[in-house]
Length: 434
Image (cartoon, rainbow, N blue to C red; front, side, top):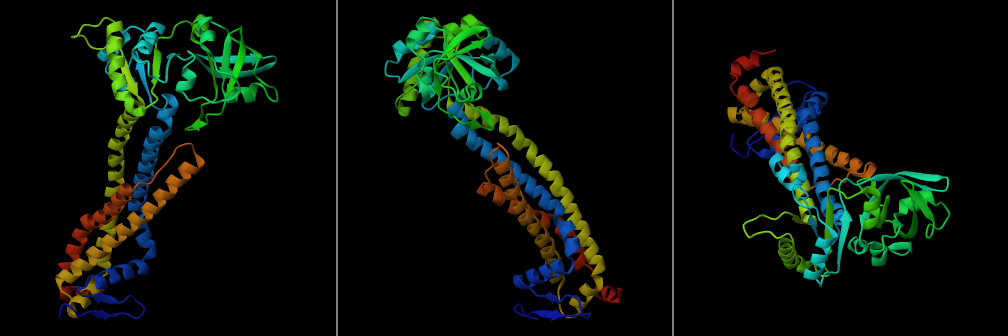
């Protein structure tokens, strides 16, 4: 038989055709014919691969979606656009060892004096603000007989509102005069206005916080939600009034907003020099403050997700190995069941290589089909997560490639042994099999 010949026989009426030949199309055709003939077995054979690939695609989609969401939304919302911060400690505090943490705790607190130093060093800055940090207090806020619980309270200087790009729905922002004179005025988030002043204009109304009265100067326009968490449930008050009510925080932060994003690197260097001079640090001494941008928050998040990426391969590998072992056992069972078929193939001219290719192709077909179904299931799960939960999810092209490659490679790895067993059968003994 030449390389172009093809043979199809039907040894028993009603069974699938037995095709062999060296052409790839013949091998693939017969592989899928066998799958159609044993649908129930094929489904349970590819189930392990399908579930593992679906888990891989869905989890990677969620992590990638979270990375993009943190980069595009969260970092800008928490720090601000075109902003860098001068802080007592770095953003990546959770990844610092105990010794470094003790050194950070010995650093001096950031103060209004430091903010004034940066204002003098960076006259071209669009805004420089000071805001209270950790621990951030939560308070019950009352107006007449109404009350809203667990409201986040921030102490700020007036430029903070520009740093955060706040727009005002009504009233006006806090002013420098409010800060200097320690006035008991506040700006409230949109959620507070809706929950506390249903149908009433909040501006000019007096609310109570920890038993103290504050007058509402303005209402911030809605900022929206991030990961299901509202960014509109806050109250801003002048930082001197805040510290009189809650005391100084363990951390305070200076935010510097530049009109031109390209000016941030140079401005950071000048801010560092100014802070070192203000803190009287010698050239050999390290900084007793940290300067961070939104990129630092993104990098911190990506470091955290690396832990997930280190766990995912182990979990997926377990499922893949289990699925591969199932494929190998099913293919070995198929070799035993189809011993007479193998003998007939060899009797009419199939070589051992033809038999090996055929069974290996069937193994690859099963695992590849499992990979495709797993990819579709994983994409569906990612869509369900992004649609019905606050978690974002994005299916990336490289995760699709990994899923397909994983499915095909499992068929090759776990299909070699059954294919070799099938090809090593003696034709005479195979024909005698019942």
